[in-house]
Image (cartoon, rainbow, N blue to C red; front, side, top):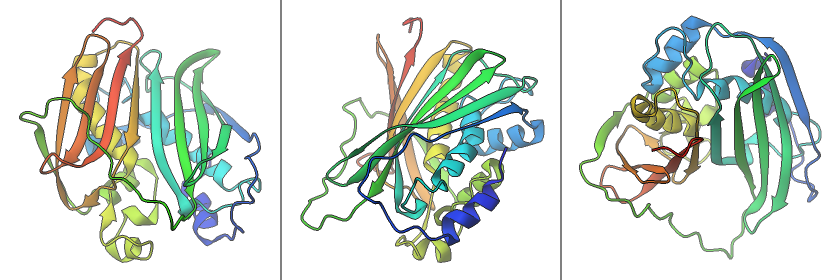
Amino acid sequence: MPSLFSLYRKIFFGRKPGWDQQPLPCIKVSVDTVTVSEANVSQYAEVCGFQFDGEVLPPTYLYVMAFRLHAVIFTHEGITFPLLGMIHLKNRISVHRQVRLSETYSFECAVVSSRQTDVGLEFEIVSKAFVGQELVWESLSTYLYRIENQGRRVRPPRALSMAWESPQQWTLSDDLGRRYAKASGDYNLIHLHPVLSKRFGFDRVLAHGMWSKARCLAQLMPDIGARPFTVDVAFKLPLLMPAEVGFGYAKHPDEWEFELRDSKGRRPHLSGKVLFADSEQ
């Protein structure tokens, strides 16, 4: 796997002219014979709240591996805009079966679509993990390269209509970004230190969006168990740390829904749902 540290040097210190107003090319990268480290998985599981038995990987862990290939795509000459202008809007992960520490993986990542919206260029990257010829895990990430539009009013995101009674309360320390970066290898500067995040317009450090997704999913995994499932989330408002947040969920006949909100339960940081392949709830 490529080194994220080396790629981030290109991302943060390289120069790109900006979006050329063209659809993105189909960029595809792949890597074979990938193994994972028990020590790294244990560290990741601890930061995100998963119960790791030493064998079955947390369902979001392969995203940590696949993101290295996303970074390769971001540095491709066909991507003419900088990573610092991008926002992770949505992420969907499908776990076709449990994946294990002892297995060897092949990864494929590709840009599959791009379109201009009223706020910028939105594009999607599909990531797939194989064991041999078997597709065991896949992800769809939606990114936005924002273009400032002075005449557009930004509406605050709306919370789900689910009942918000007795949510779990989590306290997030300001070193969470650094701990997640160490566990995942994702050293985006806005997550590391207030001095660095202020350079990009934030008063405090931000929690990684994929940490938020992993932490929510970790809370649901004891009920999900070994079933194949898809977990789909939308990232709403930035989560600045330190912070107090609330987590709540509801089980419906056709899906589970969950949300991570601010301490007052009014503003959503992340909204998501879980669907099962067998449709049995």
